[in-house]
Length: 448
Image 1 (cartoon, rainbow, N blue to C red):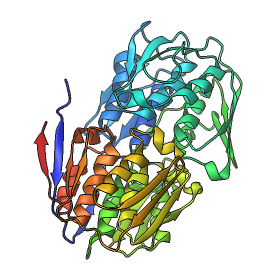
Image 2 (image 1 turned 120 degrees about the vertical axis):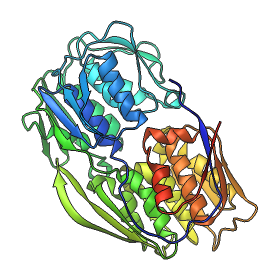
Image 3 (image 1 turned 30 degrees about the vertical axis):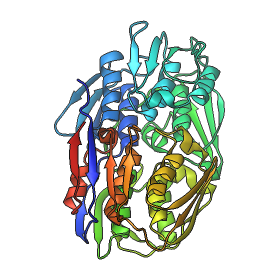
């Protein structure tokens, strides 16, 4: 059934509020839980799953194309009947469609590359087809997988390795590539070793889930060692709230006078905290309370209130822990008088859109100067944004975070916006508009 396309218009500044909310469940953990559950030995229980398009793409690939039995067991709760390592199977020449999800694409390709007798076509939506996958295919070639002539962009073919051997991989800033190597290593002979530099440590949700199987993974300082051909224990977990989704509501609160917000049960994984650490460092009133550890993940409540910030200076070390938040950070920078600088952002060009350049276009529409080079972004925040007679227009980008950030910019400045293709937000945060409404934000929806 085709998606219903719609636009969102907003034109009124949000008033002060004092609210408690819960954001959508974490997308990264939800996708990883289904993938790892499907190759585990036994029955996995995954509760509070994010029911978004990217996660449904994951379920569809596993259940409808790769023979995994998955049952829904109440609201947001699922049971996955693991087939064990190397047991995913598909008819020759079928097509797996990853939709909009780069996470699903890279991680499932990692699993399939070392799964016996895989020979199929892989593709995605219009946005995913624009994302360069050459680093992924190069890494999977090392395990013995073959992708034919087209190794950079979907659609492409994948033929798995007949004799996968573990590799040594020096990881960069991409958690998805690191996870793909880890998952490919699970069904390879021998050991797979991942070396991470301290400054490049990316999110570690895959490792945290695999720690349920201590015989499979060993982590020592900056080295991850995967023991190939060892059975995985099933998972039993409750997915916490997504800190990337929470960031948008934190930004609205900080830049709206007389506002306070409590966000309950959010994943506070230290490797996801770049946005919050940066804002706190520059004057944001943010606190974390009720902190506990569930399934090797730190979880707690975020308390945030209106704040006056200094211009943000973020060097390259922040990129791995802030990858998904630079879009909303750009909005924050526009609201702060002075020059904010984000360095080490080259990876933003290979997201759902070329995010730094798209944010430059948006900020220019409200008179905010922004310079973007390959690896740096400078935003010249004015003393006051003059919103009268201005309108922010966002076309069909298929980028959920650009859409969400533009709503936040409109609500905090009172600038009118018109955002097409807003249904793309359902890939990661289907409750976004509902939560905006609950804190007093006003908007209109028009079907296209």
